[in-house]
Every structure is written in structure tokens, then in C-alpha cells.
Image 1 (spheres, helix red, strand yellow):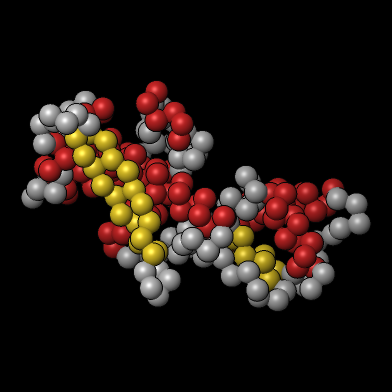
Image 2: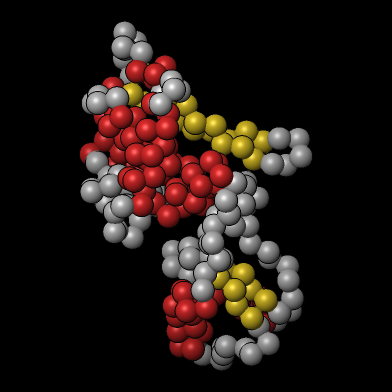
Length: 207
């Protein structure tokens, strides 16, 4: 899984953790039947000596004289309900990353650009079950690669090399960067960060 290896991995981890935290916060408000703004919190990374990165999430009552809602989250039955509602929030919407029907609201608008339901549900499943994101099918990989191959085709003096293989992997999976003749890419490499990916391809064909 991604960690704090470089800016790419940091951005993916930030998006996944921020989205998951927001979904849990909304789930808590629904489970305890309280106002969204009655509870707040955050998350942070903790680096182990062996290089592993752990994510810690925390919640607290928004008012100093709060009703102790945050202390109820870990109670028997409540946490299970919160996690169940979190999963529903992240999976039942049909938007691409986030929208007003699932996560976006006036109070979290500063994070709208980094919310990503897919990353969040993958992180949740990894945290709860140790489950890694599923591989993409060949058809899915082909669809993801369309923008890059179009850019290569339209670039003067550059072509798709038969001796360079592409593999599209889920964004939370760590990319191998040094395998000769093969380029591992994720959906962010092929959308938001396409220019950087094109430069990475140029470097690969010149190895």
C-alpha cells in the first residue's frame, strides 16, 4: 500500500484518509442522531521504525461543554453501526469521486477537490479486513490507458513502443518504478497527473 514515499503517494494517502474520516464523521452523526457539527476530529500518520506508515483517526465533541458524543463511538453496537453506515455512504452513491448526495457540504468544501470515495472504501476494507484493492480487468485497464495513448499518438516524434508494457493498478497500491520495460500506473497517473506520466513514459523508452 502507498505510504509517504513521495508526493504522489502522500497525495493519494491524504485523499483516502481525508475522505474516509469525513465519511465516518457523517456516519457518526447519523448513528447517534446528532447534528453534523456537534462532533469534529482529524487524522494523522505515524511512522514506525521499520518504515511502515499507520493512520490514526480521532474524534472529539465540538464544544467544550459537549454531551460526550465522541466517547460513545467505541461502545458496543455503536461502532459496528457507524462502520456499516460509513460503508453505505462510500458505496451507494453513483458519482465519480464525491458529491452533495454523499459527502460534500458547505462545511467541508475546502476538501471537495481531494475527496475520493473509491480510495476511502479501499482504505476502509484494508483497515477492517486486510483486503487489498482488486486488480483491474484487461478491459478496465484498456479504458484507463486511453488518455495516455492518445497523448503519445498526438505527440510529434513519440510513439507507443511494443517493448513497453503497461499495467494499471489501484491507486492505493504501491507502484513499482524501476522495472525495465514495464510501466505501472494508477488512475490518478492517467487523469489528474497525465503530463507527469507522459514524461515518465519518455524516460522509460530512453532507458
